[in-house]
Length: 383
Ligand code: USQ
Image (cartoon, rainbow, N blue to C red):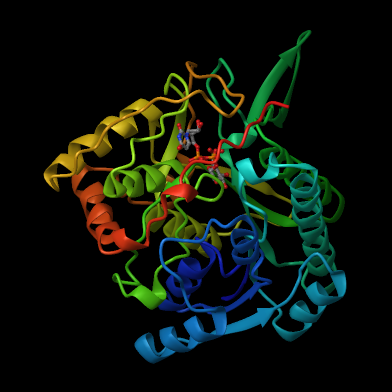
C-alpha cells in the first residue's frame, strides 16, 4: 500500500516509516520539525541527536534498500497538505502530526494556543485533503487513552451502549481528558467522527497509552536510525524518563502518591499495531477504535521495577516522591478493555526485567549526554 506518515520525524513517526517499508509498503513522511524546534526553544533536547529526515532516509536506504520519500513543511497550511496529497496519493495516512506533550500544552498561553492550532488545523486539513484527493483512503489517527481519563467504571474499546428510559443507543465512550493536549485529541476524534457520518470516511482511532523503548527490529540499535528519544519533563514519557534517571543517579521522580495507573506498550508493539491496522482496514463510513496498550502499571510499580533492574547494573537507584505538578487522581480505578488489536494478530512485547535491562544497557551508552537540569522543571497544571 501507499502509506503517508504525517509527523514522520517524531519518536514514533520515523520507526513506523522503517517498519512499513520493511513490510513491503511504499512510504512517504511529512514533518516540519516542530518537536525538534520546541525542544530547542525549551532547552530539553533528546538523549542523542538524530539525523534529519532526508539524512535518515538515505541512511535507511543504504542499509536496507528501502526508500522513504520526504516532504518538509507545515501541515497546518492547507495548500501544503494538498501539495503533498497531489504528489503522493495515499491508500492510508497515519496521523502523528501533533504537538504530543501534555506538560507542554499546560506551560503557558502561547504553548496552549500552539497545541490547539497545530493539532486541530492539521486534522481538519487532513480530512479536507482526503475528501478532495482520495475519499477511499484509510485515516489512522493516533489517539490516546488519556481521552477517556480515569473513570470509576471499566473503559470500553471506544464505544458504549447506553440504556435510557427503556431505549438504547451506541455512543462514543465518554471522554474527559486531564490536559489541554489530551483535550485536543478528543476534539480530533469529534471532527473525524463527524466527517465519518457526513462523508463516509474510513477511520481507525488508536487510543494509545504511554510508549517506552528505543530498539526496534529495523534500527537494531544503530544510532543514526534510533528514535528521537526525550527524557525531559516535557516530551519524555515516564518509563523512558525513569530509566534515564536511574542511569544518571537522579532519584526517580514519582509524582504524588504514585498510584496513577496507565496502559503501557513497547515501541515495537506500537509499530505492529499501526501496521496491522493499515493491513486490515475498516469499512467505508466506519470509525473503528482500538485501545492500544498491552499491560497496566501504577507509577510506583514502574519505579520499583526500575530499582530492581538498576541493581543488576550496580546502579544505586533511589525513589523520591515529589509534589505532583499535575492535577490528576493519584489513586483510582482503571480497567480498560484491549482485545481488538490482539484479535488483529498483535503479539505483545511485555515490560519484563529483560526488556527493561535492554533499554538500560542502551541508555548507559549515552550516560555522558544526560543533563540533569532537563529532568525536572516543575511545570504545574495549577495556576
Ligand atoms: N509521571 C510521574 N513522574 C514523571 C513523569 C510522569 O509520576 O516523571 C506520571 C504522570 O503523572 C502520569 C503518568 O506518569 O500519571 C504518565 O505520564 P507520562 O508523562 O508518561 O504520559 P502522559 O503525559 O500522559 O502522555 C504520554 C504521551 C502522550 C500520550 C499519553 C498516553 O506524551 O502523547 O498520549 O502518554 S496516556 O497517558 O494514556 O494518555
